[in-house]
Image (cartoon, rainbow, N blue to C red):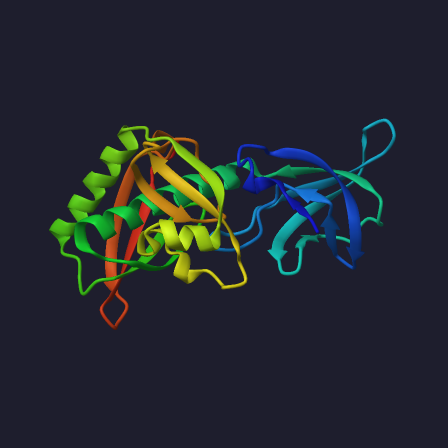
Amino acid sequence: MTEQLYLADSTVGEFEATVERALDERVVLDRTHFYPTGGGQPNDTGTVRVLDGSDETADEFAVTDVEKTDTVYHHLDGAAPPEGTRVRGVLDWDRRRAHMRYHTAQHLLSAVLLDDFGARTVGNQLYADRARLDAEHPKFSETDLADIEARMNALVDDALPVRHYTMDREVAEAELDTERTRIDLLPSSITELRIVEIGDADDPFDRTACAGTHVGATDAIGEVTVEGRTTQGGEKERVEFTLADA
C-alpha cells in the first residue's frame, strides 16, 4: 500500500521512492507526494525519473494522471519501469500550489456561506485557475456576492493558520459538528478522518474532514474575486470564484 506522503506535508515537491508494481503504463510506488484526483481536487502532474547508482537520470517519464482505488496509481507517458527500480518524483509545483490555494479558499467559502446564509456545501470542483462551489440556497443576490467576496478577502488578510490532524470517525461524529465538518459526505468505509482546521486552535473559523492539500495560512491564498452565480435547480446555487496571481 502506497504511503500517501501528501497527507502529512503538502509543501514537498520532490521525493524518492521504489517501484512496487509495474502495470503497462501505470506504476505503483511505495511512497508518493503526487495527489490523486479526489474531493473536487484534480491530480498532480510532474515527472518520475529513474535513478542509477550515481543518482543520475537514466529515464524520465511524465506523470499524466494519478488515481486512487485500492492504492495510488501513477499514469506515465511510457512503459512503467520494473519493480524494485528507484525513482525520483518531481511535482509540477505551479499546479500543486494553485490547487492548495484554491482548496483552502473553498474551505473559507463553505464556512462563510454556512455562517452567513445557512447554506450547506453539497459539491465543489477546483482547477489551477478557477473554482466553483455548489450550496443549498435558493438564490444569491449581487449584494450577497459582494458581501461574500469582502468577507473572504478579510479572512485572507487575517493570515489565519491552517493545520490538520487525524481523528477516529466515531469520536469525530460524537464530538464535532457533523454539518460543518461534512463527515456525512464521506463513505462509511473511512474510519479515520483527516481534519483540517482554519483559525484559532481553541475556536477555529472552520473545521472540515478533508484529505486535500492546503496552504499553511490564509494569506497565501491571495485576493479572491467572486465571478458570479448560477442556479443549479432544486434550490441549489453554484458560486464561481478566481484568485489573483500570487
